[in-house]
Image 1 (spheres, one colour):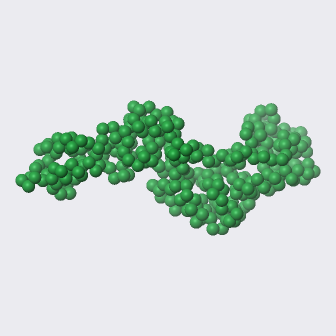
Image 2: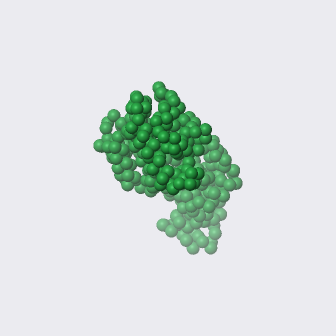
Length: 357
């Protein structure tokens, strides 16, 4: 169960390969033939449409021809404009309409990497589609910002509504809040009142969520603020946290390491895992090699510290001390009694109860 959840989290952004009726190589060549040679060369370099898939910067092209970055930009813009005004472009509108319909089917606004991966399987093909999106007059690219990844859309109203809803959704979340996929979708829907009901599809909603850089999910498909400890997974400590949380009870560090490998396919040596658990305040040692989460109410400390904490509240009998300690520590009765018998810290009263010395 856990393993399948982790796999889903890793692959949910991918789309089933799209099938288009036109050949992108033929269409791109046709459109490029409509512009002067200089502009054609700039477009080929800028979009990686030649033998190499590398896309050159304005600066790199300018240095190659000893012209300014701005001059390269002007030539590129003139080339795109020439294509849009050409007969070849007008004759190719069915292909652009097909591409627009595809984006509409995905929700009208799609993360750039998701869209291109759905359209093409290799970098050269992605470059051709990227070129067609830029040239097409009905496609609009939003640049990457601090809050959102780069995305393409064909509907300004829907795009604005999705951006606003994602920002509002982030504000409703708490740093410590972790939601299931169903819960985050329901909260998202509450903020999407202005969006066409035709787009209110679960797959579309999950795709829209991936536009946000401030809202994310962990490998177990739990959602929250992207910087929250339960969501970001940067190393063994974070994977250990997810493993123990999913288990719902204390785990031995050896089992934690084993589960990290099985669930997340990450290398996790037992000794390394143990060291990471020791150094992170999210974990509390509650028995011999057993670790629980501090958020469950466990406090750090040895058995003596736990006894001290329970006796601070009121005097207790030996049996009551044992029962209280075993609520938060997985140790033998005799270990508790040995600590309780330390007269430097605890005192047995005439009625058989114990208090702090």
